[in-house]
Image (cartoon, rainbow, N blue to C red; front, top):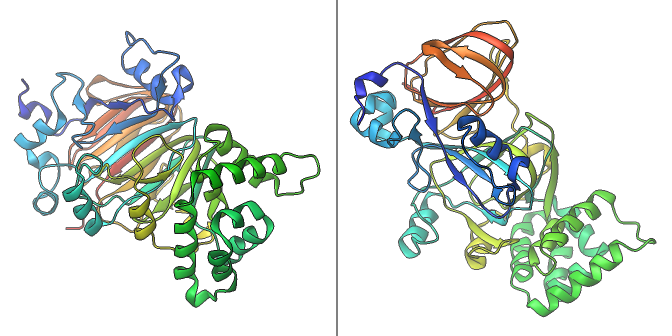
Length: 413
């Protein structure tokens, strides 16, 4: 066992939980697998296994361990809650980290999903704790670290109407009645009409779904088809992985966004989304609640998803979260939530840098570059550490340009 005093005011290397979900990139193609290899050179990466997520946090579904002792980080925090943050923070969130920090490496589309607000999370956890493992909400932010694609929130109403008119297969699945209501609706009545249409879509019979997906796939890939090339590309990707899944039709209701490294998005609770490909940093409130309804072999809860979404149509520009430049090294992504924010830290080669103290504990991950910090900590791509509250640390040597991300709770005293 460890002596808690030894960990006060120093940066602590940690080992992270790895999730091998089916949609992750396989073997060394996954940034997760490459991180594990860097952390443990003796680890044997299976080239046929999908390495999907790396978790940094204290959530019981994937708790971090202290690299030196293999003890749970949560045990250390229970013994020394001052490492988490100020008395105000521990009074509010308890002896735990209020956010969950992740790296995702995506080969296949993730499910059409949303995350519940606090009220719904409590209800779902009480009724179905197996599929909703906690009672917390889950607003989340994603920062691309490679080219990245996602379906996000509902399209502007006019775009959805145009899709209904342009793609008869979509209209056939929804039906004439529900389609007509949406096509004739005014902006003031749009939410109700959109909910009706989307709910009918997601509850369509499997026979009707398969028949119309097959027809649409054939038509979109015929030489004479003049459909939008991007929409065709995304539909084919969804269809290749899930040829009989209603989630393929969600594309016509949801915004498609392509992101470049360091682009970011924020998703409040009850917003539909599906990440499609690429690598990203993700931060969220400390929860593992996911409401799924398509593009997945996992548990689906179509009723809950369809009844809980906001049905707010949004422009792509409104989904982007732009960082604020703090100084020449640091930019900060601050979503409109209390639990978390993320810093992007860049340190050029042959420069030193001091990581500032925060009122809350934080996690730091190195994505690119090499260097050396205090207490002989070697920094490399995949190095992950827990930084106790009010702890500073100096990076003395930067051998190659460093790119790091740091998650923390922006508690105000």
